[in-house]
Amino acid sequence: MSADSLGLSPQELRVLCALDTPIKIQDFLDAIPMNFEKGKDTHQSPRRVLKERRAHCIEGALLAAAALWLHGEPPLLMDLKAREGRGDDDHVVALYKRGGHWGLISKTNHATIRFRDPVYRTPRELALSYFHEWFMNANGEKTLESYSRLLDLSRFGTAWVTAQEDLWWLDEKLDALTHYPLVPKGNRRFIRRADPMELKAGRLIEWKESDPRT
Image (cartoon, rainbow, N blue to C red; front, side, top):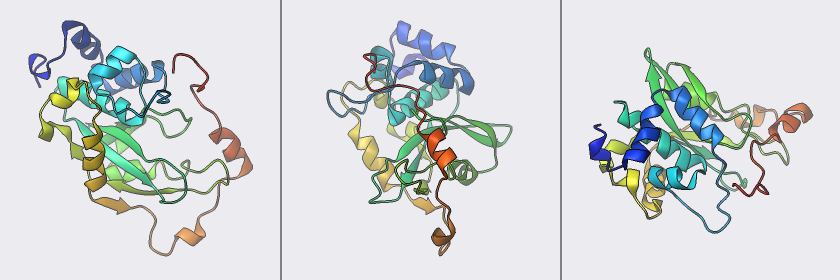
């Protein structure tokens, strides 16, 4: 994707051009505050993330996808779904590939469901790497249920990169994707809840909601 065709300003392009590796993209996302949507729910485009300097998971994934696309890689998202009715949120990540193996970029406030190095043979292996640490802090139930087919954002042109409106239509696209279960049929009853040490580690967060920057 050429820089000109994305419709970004010279200043915005300078930021994204500097993010020329997955590690640099992840470092950038880690450095900006978490978007706790204090005023209203948001679904910011990469342009708005660059302006506001805060993001939640899908907003971070979109910025990562735009940066990867700018540097000649496909802008790929994967949706990770939690079990319904458990009060847990889904998570959206951007995927990349190195040496035939998959890695991912993740904007999260938690200590575990973060960046993944490119050592996974398939997107399924990537999703499974989150299973053990994806649990509810209240009772330790492991709630990661499924992962989606990859969504290539290049199918939708470039308007999502600079949109001023919230991109709720992308949520609908992700929800409509085929999702593949991670827990073998009948094996849910064998899954151990997180133990007290794991629960303690799971309570670690990167950004506090009381932080005025969020």
